[in-house]
Length: 195
Image 1 (cartoon, rainbow, N blue to C red):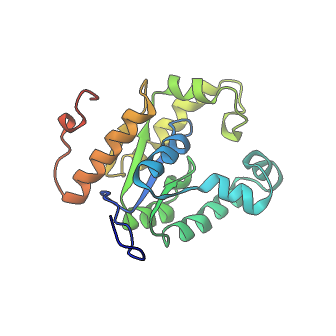
Image 2 (tube, rainbow, N blue to C red):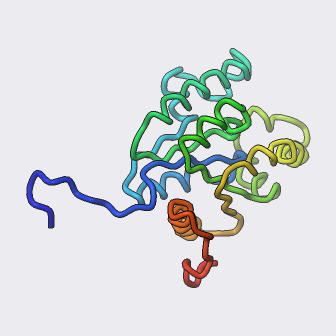
């Protein structure tokens, strides 16, 4: 037990991490759980943009267009990389921007969450996401995933969320962050029965 006035030391592999990936891969939910597991602040960049503008993401797209929304994303990334003790959940398109991607990778570590197009479709089909307001949203998901794959591949840590409990995904991320911090290869057996 630390004496009164002494800071409490929390064992964690890192004190800052960004989650990136396509919409519907679980960045917000996993990010929240990860922040709790690591006792870090949680920042959802889309929620911050909504809070400062007083508008929803679909409203921003409709009223001001995608370039305005992307400009907000870059401003929020600049603020987030200056934070300490945070899990930052980035919007689906944030990591596609070269400037944002470079800044996040330099701040590091960055974890890309993955899911199949079908899983993403199931998770997003009832949403009002601007990029999926098309006659064939699943086809659009396939198309966008293919276009964005090279960007998400740039993240040093890749984790699938397909058909998995959040607790499993968080445990894998923490194990992978530990390996990343130590400069060692990730060992799936470190997860015990959850592989």
